[in-house]
Length: 317
Ligand SMILES: NC(=O)c1ccc[n+]([C@@H]2O[C@H](COP(=O)([O-])OP(=O)(O)OC[C@H]3O[C@@H](n4cnc5c(N)ncnc54)[C@H](OP(=O)(O)O)[C@@H]3O)[C@@H](O)[C@H]2O)c1
Image (tube, protein in one colour):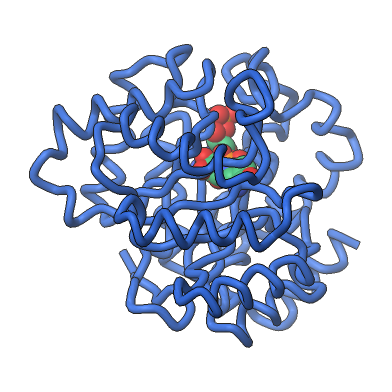
């Protein structure tokens, strides 16, 4: 494993981190989830990313992760960086989503209970709230750190200008923003238009999620939609319509280039994100241990020639 410094902080993260959005809920097979987490840690993945609502049902990924921690990782807490988030809908009534202090503090208390932890390493505000003053949301993050319930804080899904404001407020409060978690892959490029510069200038780390576009940027959908894939699952967030003919045509071309580089498409897609030095870690998901090993080998070749990069741009154009 390679470890990269998170912005200008003291914390290093593995170049590949594992997220528990899919494949770790009560609808999934616990023993498979356990094997994936054990294999990840054995290969130097020290960072595991959760959120209050991961499952399904919501909360069950944290419960399962708590079970696995208790059974298998009791003596390894200090070797782990565990994150969770609040922002999306979690419980009924006006205090179960968005960005109020009431919601964030209550949600983290619930998450800690589900995981059986005294504190998380990183607590994120999961999405910007257009109605709550940003000062209130950021003050809640600062409070949570001062209470010892999180060591660091981050933001997710904030656009460049919103992120700049949040980072400035947190700095003023004395709890610097550690990291931003945006969606970024060869298929989703918005972060290149301003956000990366804000993070670079402010010394904030960046951990892109869905770097494989939920599995599209792998060899999985080259010949249709396999029955065990995220696109085929009723609770999967990847919709069948997203596996369009036009996308598959691009995927086939990218797959050919990956083969010429001696990589799988998943490995090339992760290497492409990791070539950006502002990226601290790529946050992947996997449903099988074999996928995890495949992804880890992306680190064997992160270099691209100018010709390869130009070809990728022409395929994506
Ligand atoms: N902050 C946010 O708003 C937000 C939103 C989304 C995600 N996230 C975080 O980001 C993490 C990753 O997101 P993601 O799961 O969408 O990431 P992803 O890495 O883009 O997609 C993961 C899926 O790709 C497929 N896959 C992975 N490796 C493969 C390989 N080597 N070969 C073939 N297929 C492979 C698997 O699909 P199958 O399941 O079909 O096998 C896997 O479930 C989440 O767990 C969560 O922690 C954060």
